[in-house]
Length: 398
Ligand SMILES: Nc1nc2c(c(=O)[nH]1)N[C@H]1C(S)=C(S)[C@@H](COP(=O)(O)OP(=O)(O)OC[C@H]3O[C@@H](n4cnc5c(N)ncnc54)[C@H](O)[C@@H]3O)O[C@H]1N2
Ligand code: MOO
Figure (cartoon, protein in one colour):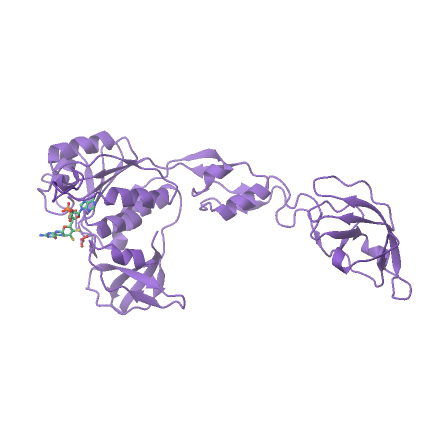
């Protein structure tokens, strides 16, 4: 920033837009189905196989052709000899007309059969199934390809892969997926107070919670950041540490973000020749947040040290870059009516609880160093004063 005009502080929404603009997708790679969990598809996905793979019984019972009951009445029932037994995993032999076979759930329905009668409804007399009314075809038969036909598009490009999607694709015979490449991330906690482990003879040391918390946040999304050792409050050391991390796609520091042109972070970035896109956002907490590009091309996030501010920075700002890099659209909160005293021109982040009935309860303690309310919270409310009144947007915690 040396000598360069200080970029104006953007609003929260403008800051996210700047981040998205700078967060180019990293290309795609092919991974095994299970390794695609918590990743984003980079291409449409088609079913490799019909699912169900064959017409299958949905119940344990008897398989036969419904047409063989066409003339059945209580007085003159159809009596179908029980000629065999069809089990799951075994391809059935040919079905002889006007007969029936016992069948297990999931077993292939023999060609020529189109009805499965559950055994608890069956009347068996002298090894014959007795049917006293005409039955309509199709009952308890799972149709081949009815959930997905081979070649059908089952998933769009840009989909976040969940365990449910993995289950579906496993049924459809999909073994590998094309997914967006993920960025490498280095976390650099900064601050002299982190250099020693807190102990009786180190009364001013604190626990490095930020890098642990952000690692957990990223792991929950399937990312594994590199957590570097804490860096002291010294511009030269910070410069060195950031340079060493700059082969990562994303570098995140926590602490030392506040202050003016002479703060250590600003100095270190200026000496590295970084381009600062903004330093400061019109939001609370998290106001001193900094976003830059390093000469290596890495995205740089300087998150404030207060843990709540650091968490918000990782959740919303690093999160916006991760979404854009993986091809996901910008996140949209759900608009809700709220009553708080928001300041004009400042977006306020509130720890909140969404009650089972849907009511949003804003928690009492909103200070940026207290974590106890976050243990109770289950969502963020992002509040803005607009000309039409107060607007709240609800976002999941992670
Ligand atoms: N005179 C002013 N003072 C402050 C202002 C201001 O505008 N004028 N802004 C306040 C706000 S808002 C924030 S946020 C903090 C941010 O400051 P920094 O990013 O420079 O962070 P530090 O000063 O290094 O630390 C703040 C706070 O967080 C604790 N911390 C730091 N790292 C960790 C970590 N890894 N794990 C847990 N806790 C951490 C640190 O000990 C401090 O208590 O500045 C305000 N001050
Ligand atoms: O903005 Mo600071 O982030 O309130 O703690």
